[in-house]
Image 1 (cartoon, helix red, strand yellow):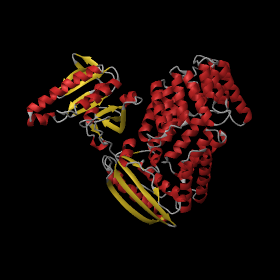
Image 2 (tube, helix red, strand yellow; image 1 turned 135 degrees about the vertical axis):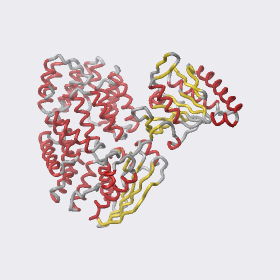
Image 3 (cartoon, one colour; image 1 turned 45 degrees about the horizontal axis):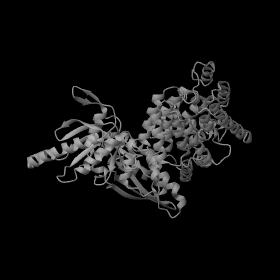
Length: 633
């Protein structure tokens, strides 16, 4: 805990006696209160001090009591910052990252407030008598990664706005979020058009060197909500927000756009554009050019002058069909993906050179093929066909390389080609978090666990509210053996999306990995009941029962899985069966189903054999044989 008296130097010049009296009182309160909460004042720094505690809860309670005591006259204006971490002591000198970060957090505070790091917040968030509010991400000098900071709420404490926090930080610069433009048309069906314009602009900005753009999923999380702009800035860690509206009537369109400073909510720029639909791409270029110039810090001169939007099509009906396809694509359900493909294909029939329509059709087929909604051989055949055509027409399309990479990764098992394609997709569009997820999967399959974690942590910066990005980061932590980090991330995901089944299931795997498989079985049972199908969701429970020593219940789960397969002959359940048999220690049956997965081109086999929950022995010759069949040797 760093504490620092505000305005001490100025007070010394005005009233030395009062300054000394306040410093003496501060020292008395610090020492007496710290002792009550099992702490120790290690060092004084003139008008401030460094203290340590045996627990984060004690530290925060102590900080609250100190601030509340110093509200009583003679009042002392104090800033307090807390962080949890290791410290080192040598020759009466205390140092280490923990000390540095606590100091940075304290410097950010205002008099009368208590700021804490995310690590401290994680320790106190379930305490009924302790409350804190998120202030967002801050970039501290000499600290590599942005850090989430929280302010403690309690009687008498100051709770500042984010823009009041001005410590030793680097504020976000050239970080932009494009919120979904509001549909102001008389016909609510035109929402696909306003959403499409927003997404088209977002994709343009993501290609501008030096400008970091929040991914679509996180930006669109605020659609239809009346969230304060400053709060959005905190959650997305951006300094600029573009919002607007679209009114479409016949062949005319009015686009209103406004660029807002996220720290205080003030408008930097706003303008109305009344145009014919034929000029829609010129409008997008105008808007994007203005925004780039308004965010001109750290951008190269060439980025200001070059044309940002080139008309991808001449046929407006084809463009309209594409935007409708995009609308259904973003609903992320099998039926909506199929509708999206149909619309993309209609757009292509009207405009055969529509590269992005080919690329998005390829990405939709990749989802359907990887989830078994369309036979993988058929689906990935279309992925290759459409991705190749897209890249033939435009070799700068990130979506084309992402789709191509997904086919190499999920079906062909051509790992080098998958890696090259996905790296190219990310280079062309750093906000393409779908490519980040696929690359993380590649790293996990090829045993590069630290790289899998790093790529998803990077994706989270761009897309912090995405459920899929957060889920993929949990997977990466868990398979890498970082179980505590995985559990923490799973709990954060559940805070954002309390009903998300995949998040609950991930929490169950994390708790099981920590040794409490009985508790994980309870969580898996809750998830299974929420599926509302008598035969689905039994694989995780079966694994948990097996791991906790209840072989009979595990066998009952295997029977349910086999019954499900018999009732729906088209489904493939070998991965489910492999997991439960492996959890029971039945290697022969586990390997049998893993080989079935490989023969049927079911990708999870590559993860199962490396997953710490299943303990597949690497010295078993069948392990090496599986890797050979998947081209992983």
